[in-house]
Amino acid sequence: MNYNIKYLKKPSETTVMIHSADEKLTINHVEWWLPVLKESGINFSILVRDKENFKKLIKKYPFLQILYAKSPVDVETVVNAQPNLKVVLYPTNRAKNIHLLRFINYKHIFIGTKNSDWLSKINKSYRAYDEMWISGEYQYKKVLSELEDLRHLKLIKVGKPQIKNRLKKTKAEDIAYLPSLDNNEFSSFYKILHNFKQDIKVKILNDKIDDSIIKEFNIINHKNNFKFVRDKSLFEEELIFSKAIITDLPNLDIWLFSYDKPVFIYLPQGEKFIHKKIPEEIVTTFSNIDTLSLKEDEKIKENREKFVEDMFGKSFTMKNLFIAKLKEEVKE
Image 1 (cartoon, rainbow, N blue to C red):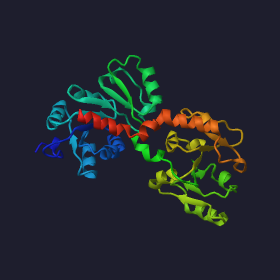
Image 2 (image 1 turned 45 degrees about the horizontal axis):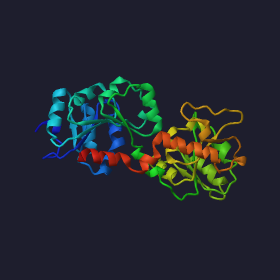
Image 3 (image 1 turned 60 degrees about the horizontal axis):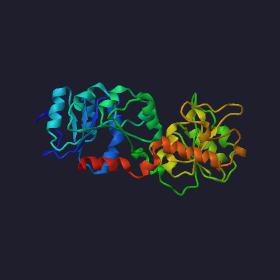
Image 4 (image 1 turned 60 degrees about the vertical axis):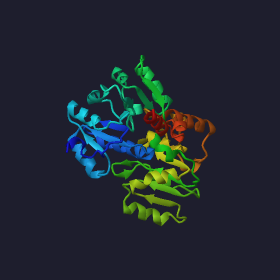
């Protein structure tokens, strides 16, 4: 049996193949898209170009159709073994992609990685793909500004299917607080929570909170308003079922906005809000917990919701457009 296609089911009915040629991040990229491909119900395979990643993936996912190709000849063996193949998906724009792009009978679609919308530099080599499936308006404008002549390349907005559950409306009254760390000390932790007098449940999400801090807060926490969550695998669910997010500037991350919740930023007195990717107009800043109102200003809410739409393609995500479009491609 050919080792390259050993894990391909016989006879092959795969119509979609995802190709990753990134030696360092192949597993991350595959796992980012794996839940989406499984949800689609489409018969798919995974082609990797690095043997070590291949070994790790087949060990972790023994029931998936994971293929390996080192050379262009190996790639040809892989595609020939999949007579029903119609679409090839590319998370990254790597030189080895050309080994597949030369097969003009397939639809070649660049889908990107978790952070490629705002990190990737777009150049002329992207014209080799038939389409780029992008999240929303932010990436649309970014591609047009960096690649003035698209030629035949089509830009299709499909949202971010991985965050669909985050964007659903939930009934929640709790607040999620994500404190940052500074030299193993919580830089804003005590300043914010010691004086927190509002009768609201606060979930504190941090995997480095030690037992001594929890013990101290249990002593002062007469109303039982604080809940500590140290297991990172639970953070997403806790954020989904929160009505707002509190954090500080060192811990502010663009992905917090994928939960489509009001975001409140603690700033020490006199410190200015400065962030490379996040505009001040979409957050509420505060320096004194006693004066913090957890009601988001209407203009800030409007700006934040537009940011979520432009950055993550909320409307396209909620329509499940990625999967819908992929199903259309394999039917043609």
